[in-house]
Image 1 (cartoon, rainbow, N blue to C red):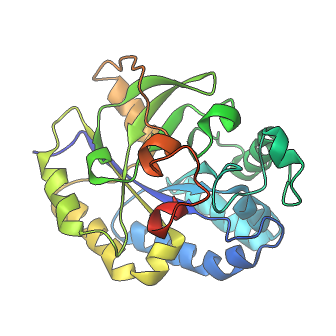
Image 2: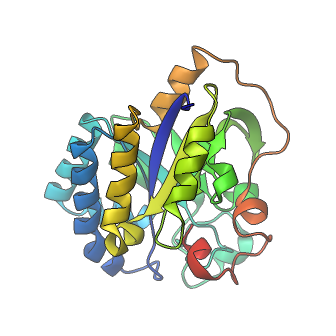
Image 3: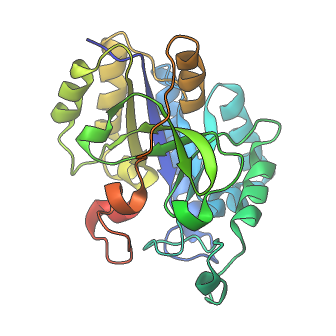
Length: 271
């Protein structure tokens, strides 16, 4: 079978330093190449940025104009926030201990304000947030979470995160450390009322562009169409009811495997 729809999220990372933008300067051409590749396959990406990316893009008229073109072409810009307990914290947090840290850049509201400037006149609708308890921003409607094969197929559910009511869908990581054939098998197990989600990072594409293209080709060859998270859920709501669920996926429990993410090793720390 095939799912109701599929999405492909790109997580763009902080890069180890909350103050400088060297990581973004190196990987901006990589992200541009990834978007160009997705256009060749008719895939609309959900590009979720840590705030450093918004800062970097807003500094340059050409970069800002290119991002606007991506949005006009149907790609979605969302928020990816690494909270204070994350290995690659972005410097924004509502936690008191984070505010005393030398890497502190501002509150989550400050991060959202920066991202809102970037996406305007579109809205900031989807996001992946690592600190759901303290840092979940108001305004996000569609939460994406997960990393393992089991998270790739999901029925959207209404959940509460950080005092916010939202709709959550799952996703699995695609990288060179993952067996793509297992993801393809999961795809074929999908039921018609499930959504299939994949996430990768700008660094994963730089390491293995052929692998990312293989997934894009796989979806197209199987008569699928990659749409943005927001578009798929909006379409889904017209056909299926979305029920409340008291057990949302969370970063601490379902991605890192513990409440503290500082010690997470390997590819999962990038999530």
